[in-house]
View 1: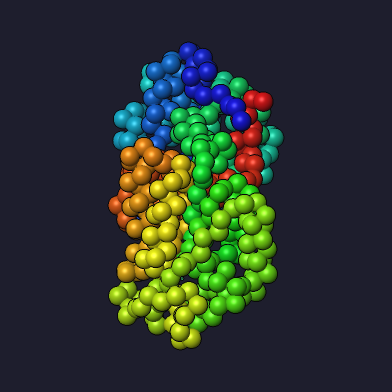
View 2: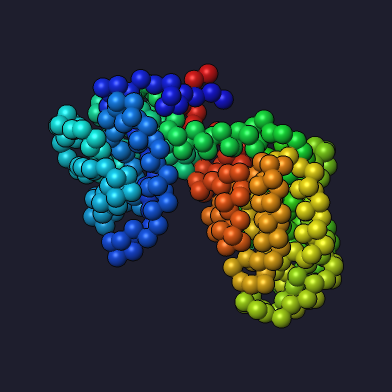
Length: 393
Ligand code: ADP
Ligand code: MG
């Protein structure tokens, strides 16, 4: 995979159309988390430092091709100005004229792209109109790259295109984790259900040396091997699929690591009375809510000799203590090894990022992807249209 970055482009006197992800949470008109805006700062400042003008293009919410006032980017514009420390002009009409009148370090923010039905249809006409506003296209929205939209795919084929800083950082981290990783590679896949992660498991067994299966989905694998999982979350209808995955892993030389001990409780509640038992000893009236200490010890041992870790999905019901114990302990181990320079660790997924933050170790991971769906599709081995459109060979 090869793509151009900001360093490869000459921005002097040019207008850069920059696709960003500033789809931030807003409550009562106030932005409650500015993380996504903070992450676009290097791209904006570097383009300006190279003499370019910045025109930001973004989506906000799911207006489905219609103008929905509460999803106007006008709401977010002041926060973008604050975080960037630059004057922002939000525009919802006469884009061409507004762009022609841009002055100094002023940054233009176009109205929510998804107000136009052409955006999500990857419409050539809409992409052409956007392309007409600039000289260079910069995609800094990895998290939107799994969708072929006018502002992520079609436009990249109309203008000289490159990856923004955040996109380049994300692609670099992901390439290092699963493209050409240092081995052994360990993947940890947890979370609620096997059904949402079938493609992901299928792709990983052919790529990694050790695959830890945890969380609710491990129950499906235990049940598929004939164990009684009591009242646990379990997809019994996927027993054949689980056995297929085990067979595929064996053929590929991938070690599957299932819970060696389990933490069971009678209710799904914080502080619920619980006990640690063998995987085949879940009482009929109990449910498995976490992996036990023997499992964590073995995961730690595998991580000790690993060079690369990719992680998606918590090992237990991490939202309710003490069923966050295995997730926290494995995360702490991975973080310590990463901090010591012994492990390249990449993690992603909505709940996974929340769990690692809750464990207080996110900062020590090599890379935490906040891309959600795009991260998962990448872990599934799928080509991301927005990334493919940037590729130069
Ligand atoms: P991500 O968002 O990182 O991709 P998922 O959405 O797949 O992760 O999984 C997270 C969810 O899995 C959490 O809500 C967590 O409570 C749930 N979970 C993990 N282990 C279990 C379990 N043993 N029983 C029930 N739910 C579980
Ligand atoms: Mg989730």
